[in-house]
Length: 175
Image (cartoon, rainbow, N blue to C red; front, side, top):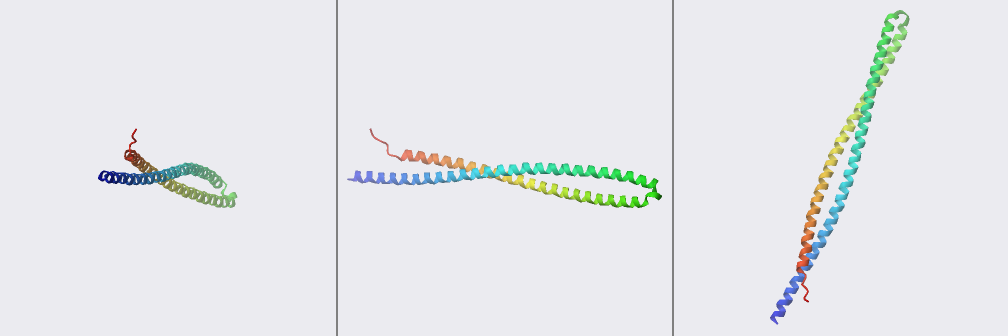
């Protein structure tokens, strides 16, 4: 009778341990699935930020080209203005009215070009700031992805240990 009670107590303890291990295994699987989802989301976010980074770089290059073209146009206009001024000096008495008109026109063009150059520079600055933000976001998502991968590896190790415990706790079949 004592042997039966001892055997029954051992069976009950084994079942309780098996139930607890199965619950831990189920929880580890659930956590593992959640981490996989988080990893996929982080990878997707990193890819989106990488795309934004590439677009920002392309935009920055376009605006840099526009600034360069605007500077070249300003230099050409300055050369044209200098040529006009030379003509005006030689024909000062006949072309005084025209000289004033050209000067006004050149001033307006210079103002327009300066405004455009300022706008382009502001855009370049904004795009560079967005590029830096995209880089920072991409680096953070990469860190999150690495942390999620580490957690996944840890949970997989726990899962393997729990599965081994289940196998070890199952009563061995007699032939």
